[in-house]
Amino acid sequence: MHAWVYSRVAQSSAVLGGSALAAGLVLTPKRSVSAEAPPVEVQEAIEPKRKPIYDPPPPQTTSPYQPPSPDAPKKYTPTDTLATYIRSARLQTHKAALQAEDAVNDFMNKTMAVEHDISSTIASLAPGRETGEKLLPGSIYVLVAAMAGSIVTRRSNILFRVVVPPAAGIGAMYVVLPHTRQNVGNLIWEWEKKWPQLANTHMQAQERTEKFVQTGIAHTKMSVGMVEDYVRGGREAAQDWLRKGK
Image (cartoon, rainbow, N blue to C red; front, side):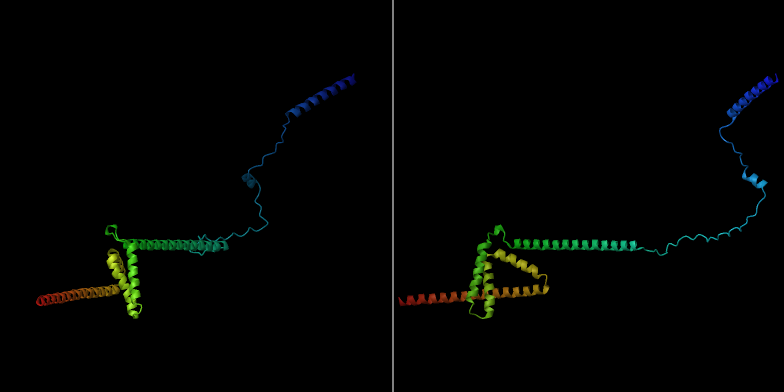
């Protein structure tokens, strides 16, 4: 009897223990919960202040802020120096190229101006169509006259050999190419006006030459008149002698 009671009590205790263990496993949280530490202010109020075992470091002394001076010299690096040299060389090369280009342009402009002056000068020497002059036969006549003067004076002194051929050519030019001679004279006069002294000398020589020519023409006319008078007088004398003879 007592044995049966004890067995029943043991069974009931085992059932209750298993139920309590199962309930504890179900109600136990899966994460561990830690206790929250009190704030720092509370800890300082609770715990007494402890004196540090090391002396505090001395305070760092800082100088007041000074802005950089604008006039402070800048330190150039080798790269900056090389860049400066390259820039200077590039500018000098560009300047030299511009000067060379300007020199070439000026030379070409002057050359073209000289060429235009020469062509216009040669064109201005030719006679107009309305004059009827022809340069080809006329220039040949002038050349032949100059050569004839040289041949005539080949045994004369040096002065005649120098003066007579050009004079003969100019004289022939007065006859066969008067308008061309006038154009050449105007061109020479334009050149002489650049040197006033030479122009004055030319004017004086021209005046003397014209005066000499006019004087020669007047003397020639007088001589011709005198010859005609002598011829007329001789003819009349001959006629009178013939009448008397008859």
